[in-house]
Image: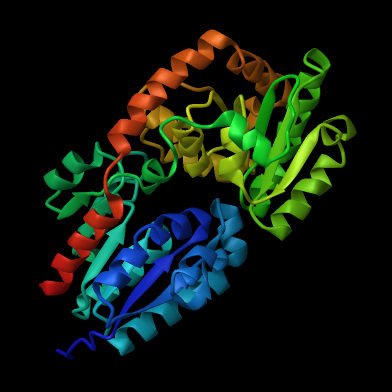
Length: 383
């Protein structure tokens, strides 16, 4: 078998969330192995941390079955190129970050060629497609887990793994500075402040934003002093959000549209209306009441929900194994239903209850993530 060149580590992170999570670990790995070059797929944060990008993470940012089909030729081309270059380069290791549909098939081939494979953020076999655990066992030398309950699942499956905590739990303060965040955003609120996060993908904004801003419009009729904060993931997403927001002039007049700064928006808010995804956990870690809304094409939803293994789609509910926050999916993602839940989220008793529950959740996710991940990766490299 060919020798490893041992002069690089290949990373593959898709979407904003993967880029964010990997950026918490990549600098520590690079510092522990200064002789190794970090290259592969990543977003702006990983690139800032020293990744030499072969492709940008945004090129893998696609959701749903029907949406993936439209972009499939491009994604398959990137995947083939990743396989070819990695096997040819013979790096010290391949580190896949989330994006299991993209990464696992690459990891299988890479590992079969003798290159060590680490996968950060375990595929959610506890939520859907449990049969995927067999592919994980073939594809991965070591898993880096970000949720504590996953340890038992993968230990029983005989897959080496390490619980590294969730990187967000280290970044987000245990006690948010709401007033300080409002000062930074120059928001002098007389009424409630609500952060609206309709998603970081084009299709999410298309399907979720109209209902979200419709809910904001209904809320203004009952609470006219309410202010809204809307972060856009990048200039393109901001433009797409603004196109929807223009259809709701009453909401637009009471909205601050931000360039990024989603964490500052959450910290400044009294409540958060958010599309499903990592942002639901971020909202919980900021100890804010949240309402989860999500909509997509009907066929995509049918296919995804038919494979589901859990009652919930949002991370706070999955971690708690009960319905802590409302989830308004598909036909229930309507302005009327969302605005009703937002009013409930603003009630003081509701806020105090969730603050206590989310503080306990934060403690369970808090670990020295970069250190634990680097130690686990080092052990794989030594083997």
